[in-house]
Length: 323
Image (cartoon, rainbow, N blue to C red; front, side, top):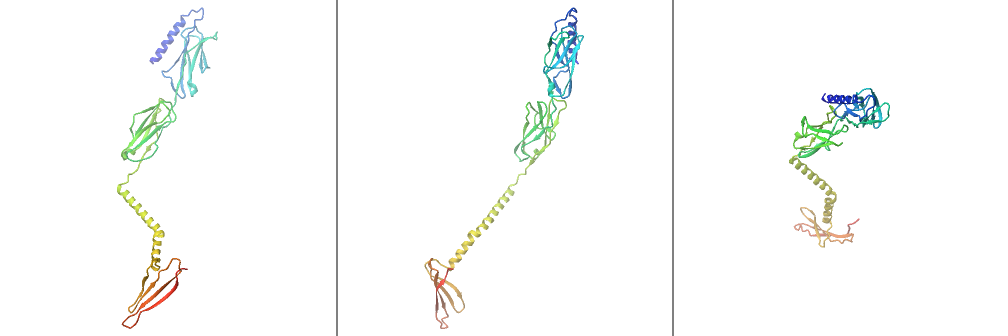
């Protein structure tokens, strides 16, 4: 109301100056002034605005012409000292200006131009998105939270919440980039529901983001880790024993069995092959060379002396030992 009173007083002064101009001729026209009917040049999409254009000196009738980007938008004729009123609708970015007004006499193409006006278009913000590089965390870890609104006039102010409680001061972003905070996860209560809020100078533009929740990984106890380690060691031992059977144990067993039946040393091996109540039978095997295929061995049978029996020896020669 106070602003309109000043504006009307200014128009009254301009009207009085015009009335003092001699009627016999046209007065010297001053540069007109282009005035907005509101205090701020910030406008929102599809908003109607009114521009006033008036020259402080000069004799009516006067023609006022409104230009946008040096192109004529509208014109009005005034037969008195009242200002010309131009109503505009800001429906896109191209409607923000710059605007100028020209005042001229009807009988002359010469005129004077006003100051320039530019509007600032304020766009409502889109719903912000709350995100994090990870949704799984453990105790003692710092987690990053990012809040970003893709559309909307800058600057944009972001606020982070856990539940309904604010967890950071508002962050005003003058560039088209996300606001970032770090959350220290110290206990299971820190894995609650997080949100962020975004707003700009657009009326009633406040919007909340999606909900975000961390999954807190349970720490395994020392006993569980010990049991798992022992189980792995036992499994490795079983696998190692199973692999050693065909490669080490079986070949070793066969080698020992072969040595017991075929000695490779230079002394005679005596093997007790049979023993009964009345007699004992021994087998004496002569050593064999690696290149020979036959061996000589003898079987000695000792009979009971009380029965008047004697010792008998049977000799076998050239017994085949290789196929």
